[in-house]
Length: 133
Image 1 (tube, one colour):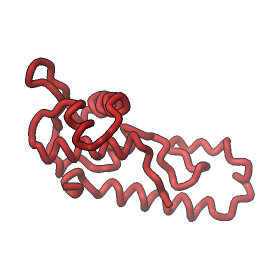
Image 2 (image 1 turned 120 degrees about the horizontal axis):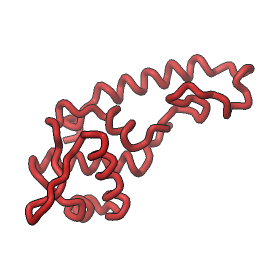
Image 3 (image 1 turned 180 degrees about the vertical axis):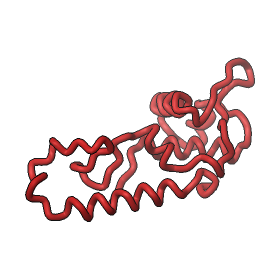
Image 4 (image 1 turned 90 degrees about the horizontal axis):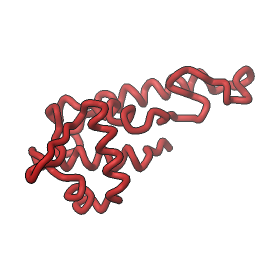
């Protein structure tokens, strides 16, 4: 079945942690609490910051914090921010570029897989960080 990348899993875990804490937390604190590799988590946090999902604060009480309430951050936004290639099959690309598929003209499941991809995106898009708490 569909498998999210480690980047997405760790990003969701980090956002869940920030939502539960209700404040600012360092990458090290999140890494230790979730047993997440620190180096990868630091990169994930930078991607989430770049996408405007979290912000970072410097100083003694610095770290990361959510920019929005957990109820307003949908999982689709997080998935897109961390792994733009999450698709049900390899031939379905977010850009619509199907050149890599050798069976493009003879494929009998292309349309149903596109429909399944849409439903998956709608389902993920309707869930929020708040539902992970």
